[in-house]
Image 1: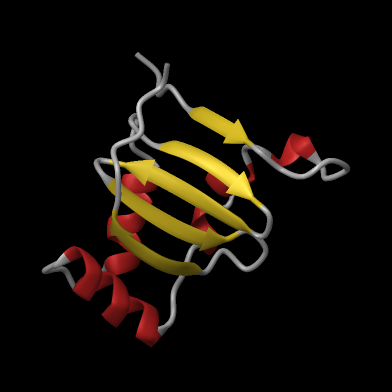
Image 2: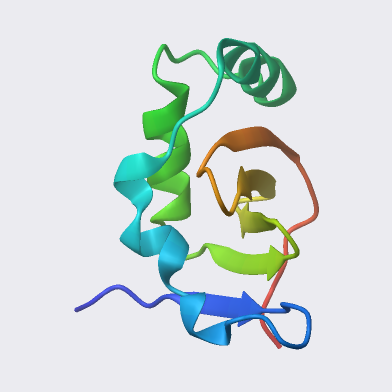
Length: 103
């Protein structure tokens, strides 16, 4: 059975809405800074050396709800919110958040 991807595109009027799959199509470009690694590990109490791979796995989850607002992607999955810059594919932060469910 194939992966189900749910995308919510809340881009402002006039922006290209055909870019909804852009984050998934460019997961190979996903990266973060040294400070980003420290911040994400602290915020989520992670015990992993590869924060980027951990975030990629979460983003690729069938439960991930991806929203684009302005310059950032917001990935809600497993009560975690991962924020990714839409232009540079930099993981800015990740933190515990509310579980989002589809209605």
